[in-house]
Amino acid sequence: MRTPLAIALLVALCVPVRAPGAPEMVVYRCVAADGSVTLQNGRRCPKGMREERRVVEVPRSRAAPVLPATVAAPPPIAPMPAQRSGTDPTPAGATPTIEIGRAAAPPLFACRTWDGASFYGDTETPPPRCAPLQPIGLDGREVGGALACELRADACEPVAEAARCDAWAERLRRAEAALAFPTGDAGAAREELDRVRTAIAGTVCAR
Image 1 (cartoon, one colour):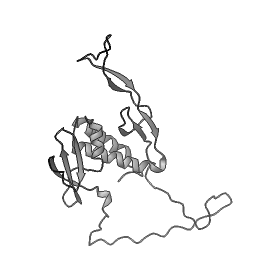
Image 2 (spheres, helix red, strand yellow; image 1 turned 90 degrees about the vertical axis):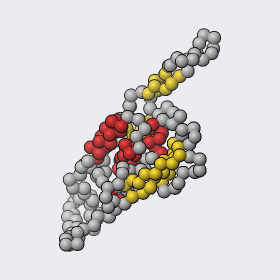
Image 3 (cartoon, one colour; image 1 turned 135 degrees about the vertical axis):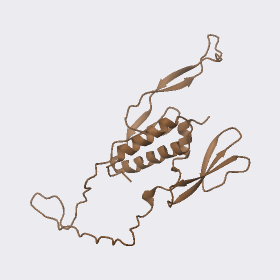
Image 4 (cartoon, helix red, strand yellow; image 1 turned 90 degrees about the horizontal axis):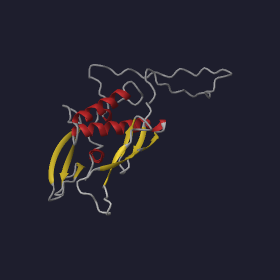
């Protein structure tokens, strides 16, 4: 059986329902006879599968901004010439790149669960998960109806600073997809989306 997290991975490239005038894409949700679910961008479901069609919005950051016809675009500002001194490490003719008013990319960790599902988290040591176990009786047979589990830790590693904005964008897409196609607790999906948006607001990773 697919877990909610596994299904969320299948829709990682989807986004919420489109706003008026925004670019759009068509996503088909395909349900097989055994209940397994797949999602396809712009491609119809195979015959014999139940099909649901949704139109979703492409993130606004992918569309170039359009200036109103009555407002002229400001002319480009030429960079100031570099001031060199005996202790200035900047080579002659080079203009340093400075992000003004934006914080650095927040830390992020790429994690994998005991059953192979991947996700992005805020800590390198998240709480352990309960991996289901089948109890065995003294006679060596499985005990029907009994429940047991083993606590297992997720394997996490920090995302390199150069790749953080791409990783945050992926985490944001997954959170948006989980809310657009809820398969579990909708409240938890909303909290995750709000958490991601708050984390990157005002940083170099903001849209």
